[in-house]
Image 1 (cartoon, rainbow, N blue to C red):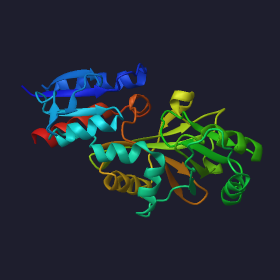
Image 2 (cartoon, one colour; image 1 turned 90 degrees about the vertical axis):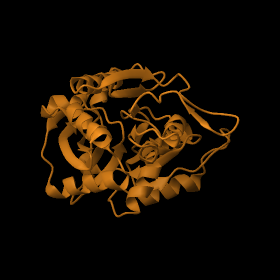
Image 3 (cartoon, rainbow, N blue to C red; image 1 turned 30 degrees about the vertical axis):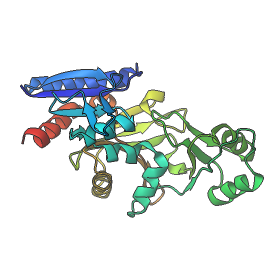
Length: 293
């Protein structure tokens, strides 16, 4: 019997996350693949005294990895298990600064970005010269982001110097970055889904009261057909990061578009509702084609 396992975060209770796994299970089982949804809390991959990896999920043909625990994904993959997405792809997307570095190195447009300074001492204040450099390089407003996070959490906007000082103090002991605020895209962006290297669907997201457009923060989505240039850019992003599936957040600039973030486990419930496309089925078909031909 064909068998798949979907691994979700050990602690998550988010309905968006649970819907993701349930929808994929439905589509797999409709195609004759027995599917189990497991929380990533069973120490499914461990290292033995002799350095060998014990994979307790070997009965499954493949794993849909809907977690960001990079240690388990790396161990499972080293044991020979096929993950969707692959370990390197997940790692490349999980850290927003790493994503910006990888994409900018290959000519993908991203907003001007400054890496946050590494701080180990919570008592040490962010230097005035550091803040003045950020002001000089990016102007106001300026976006401050935790390098790790999703659903718009950990993303802040500093409208003036004192707000920047306060936010910089709050985030200084966590990986973070500073980014130019793209005014033309305030409260508005485009989420593009790419599956198997090909454009699948897109929606415009808008917020009436927040500079962030995430649906989980109250934004709304409507179907949109991106230009050929945007489609090509997003397909190239997925290829560069070796993603089987992703959601790419695109900002509207004055004369061009910018890639804001790339999400390896982008929730597709809102996309399915906005576009009336069965994203879960498209992703399931891609994975089954990779595994069974």
